[in-house]
Length: 217
Image 1 (cartoon, rainbow, N blue to C red):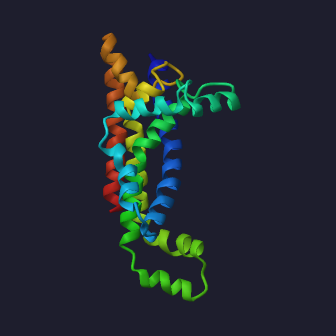
Image 2: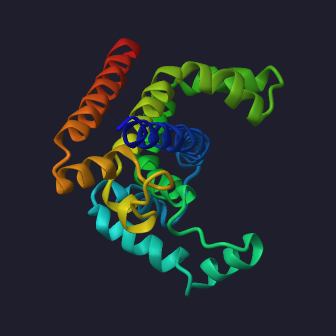
Image 3: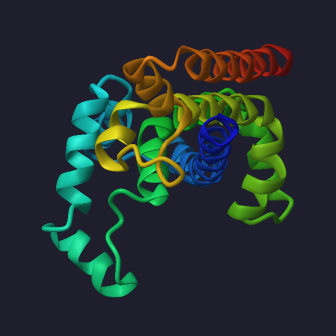
């Protein structure tokens, strides 16, 4: 029972932490670019970025299989380089979680950047600061609440990811089984004690995440 409980908890936290690192960097940089740049097709590009928020997880999982599956060019390239498929590995769980969590980080970062007075950033440029110096020393510190909120929500979203992960990473105990998929399997097998332990853990962690967001705001 201990292994059946501890293994998915540890894997879920590991996947969520790696996902957080990825979406924080990618989402923040995308938000910076989309906030500052104006170009044709910007609305379309942003809509594509936000699509995972409204797409069913099964659709996301299907698209990931098509893109990274063993018969796809990308999948064959990965197999050639790493001598293994990315499907049914914990890396697949990270990719699935990153796709569904990225819009939350992007939206939060973009909101934070949009609320910053441009005059403050311009003043830093006048003083001789380059674009990246302005971004790291002025923009990000001023938008820290939005960035932290986005990070917390992304972590929580990754922690609860189910559909895309089940399709793309599978549900292999000790390898790709996260808390969400373990709850599903526990319920299917009638192991209600394990299901309640995992559900309680998820509720507790999610409560802490939401509490943290409220405190930051």
